[in-house]
Length: 246
Image 1 (cartoon, rainbow, N blue to C red):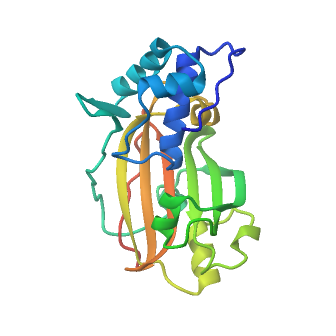
Image 2 (cartoon, rainbow, N blue to C red; image 1 turned 45 degrees about the vertical axis):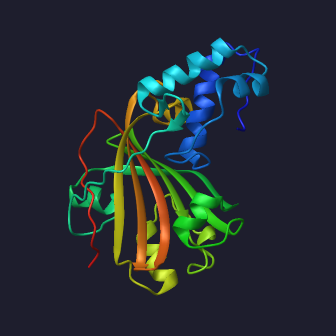
């Protein structure tokens, strides 16, 4: 596993290791059900003690990211429960506008990136094909409340990577460029620990609870356009998710 540690850092090494594994899972390089390397193999590859690796793994087990099965090994926890919460599909911006909640959006990153296996599968493209990665931070009434990570199939939306999404609706722009209507989405929710990278953007501690919404958006049944993650502060609940766009 590609985990980087800095032995000169003030952050304990076991925390760096747990954060590295956590980020591999968040990025899709580790998926639900995947087995991670053994403690011994991780210790040897990272040049740290086995006890340090064990403490990192214990942290991830306690937060629910990993599970140990006696005699088999350590695996990424399966999250297989989905909760449909409505019948109409709206973007988060549209929902905020309907509730008359003032908000601002700031683009953190907007790049064309090569798809790994997970992203390629969800966008129905080949591994290595480019997709648009769009990362935005949304504040409501001045408080940073959600981090939005969109992965967009650019084959149906040529030139979308050049749009300024600081003040532009993603769904509306997709439909305009593709000349197609978004028809539906499938969403799942997970309660997770936010981690230092996303926690820093949302201005909350790394061990804070976070609600992650994973969403696949489609023009038609076999025509995916977007595979996204929305990270919502665990102590805020003011949004609903919906499934059918009219």
